[in-house]
Image 1 (cartoon, helix red, strand yellow):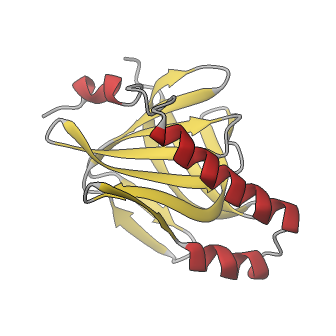
Image 2 (cartoon, rainbow, N blue to C red):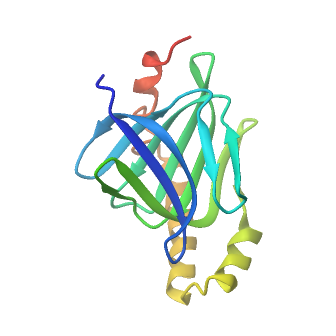
Length: 169
């Protein structure tokens, strides 16, 4: 694996920088990238004006044509949690991948999937002036993501798991 560093930037609607972190490129195609988030990496949270340390390895997926991202926490050689953002499709320029986070999230933890941050979605829709079409699209994309997961479609078809072996134990 080449040591290609990729900076990930999460933006809020209107291209406001929300948070960012550094990762290592695992795979890049015309439609997506997979990156590896190293245990102990720093996440700079601009909205909260804080820096957080991420205590686990992650395999992360960013799509250039789908309206979601996936971050899979890897502990003890297995994925123990998924965190999916509903967002506008990611963009990549040079070594920076960015996406506009639309607040709605789908999370797998404690053996179940759940939608979180619906309150944040509702308040940010007002705060940032989401157009009604964007609000509807976010909800439709959330339903589509839930269906994709239930049918085990890419990247929930083993595509994330293929990278687990490169993570040091």
